[in-house]
Length: 232
Image 1 (tube, rainbow, N blue to C red):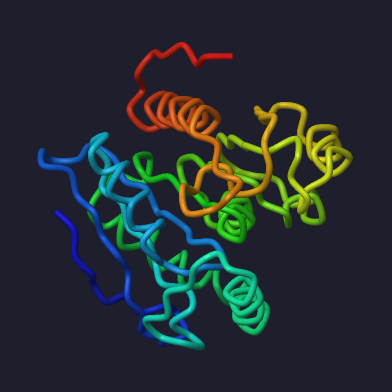
Image 2 (tube, helix red, strand yellow):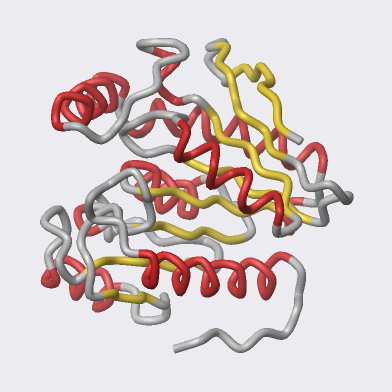
């Protein structure tokens, strides 16, 4: 089951959020943070997918601050527009909307049962949320902004996914993150940026499935206290 709800950030900004719920009562929640294409059909499909795995998923529409209800794709012009909007808003203003989504999830679940999960731009915001907003766990996919924010220290278990062929994130930058945060698990796949998105030419089904399994194991371990063996 899915629908949109209205949330309000601490600065009074109202915005939409996409919610996907499992058929059975959820035991934990995920705040799903969009990339530069907004809460588009891909992000909604990710939300729906994790809902089928038993999670309550809420995806705040971060671009509502500039262009409400916008949905972008992955053509060059769309990417440029998404970066423009994201830059205009800025990460720390976007965090206010992420915080509102976390507060909503916290009102429905124990705080120990709420994680953040982000892709690209959203991965960087998930990293910042892990350091500043204290979710129970955080997962970031191919986030180009983490290396320059490596001085931020997550306050919760955090998992990172990167592509070895990502033109937005160099292996040196990944090494920097790992050097500063030796305890954070980082998985590197022989793929490019956006490998989890079927709407992109860089999509890789094998890497996407493996990263999803690792993410689910991570969520089950840290939100549901289930013993799992993460595939290496």
